[in-house]
Length: 254
Image (cartoon, rainbow, N blue to C red; front, side, top):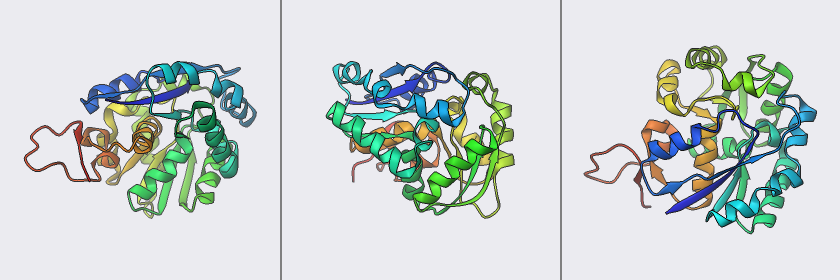
């Protein structure tokens, strides 16, 4: 069994994670601890306040007791709002507190783009334009070329959580750019896990979403690779074992 511990701010789209467990259909567990937030409005000061060491450290012991082998701060804005260096300092502090490898959704996006062998991305964000620009700047600091950035103007995480699939599809298509190799949707408050392949079909290229990459990053840190194309191209970057009949949750050994 592989256990990835997740720290999640407040309550929004956390039900994506048990859905991902089912979609992986394997011995992977994704226990989650809800961290405190003051306000679910995604403004820079609120995002930074959500990612303080005290708030992230609150769930460490509980997740350790759950058998976590890695930890991921499942909050894009609560990491990229600190900038490239600040997000890595944040992850390093979390790793020291937990005694486990740790990362964040923002860092996971950069790692996932590299995994796909891509360098040019379009940002289709639900956030306001200024917060979306912060994420684009974070990606650029990580060596990822951002061809276009679009903000959807959704300020509150609760409003993102209430968005229906059609709105997420519209956001994805509107945020795509012809020069982009991958489309990134950086909001852990959006429900996306159930239809990543459908989003990819709409734009004809890989789509990376926040909750998807958070789980992938935790598995990467745990040195566990799973072939699960129902979670999109990111989970299908390695061929399944020969003779595999079921296209879900198949472990790929290097």
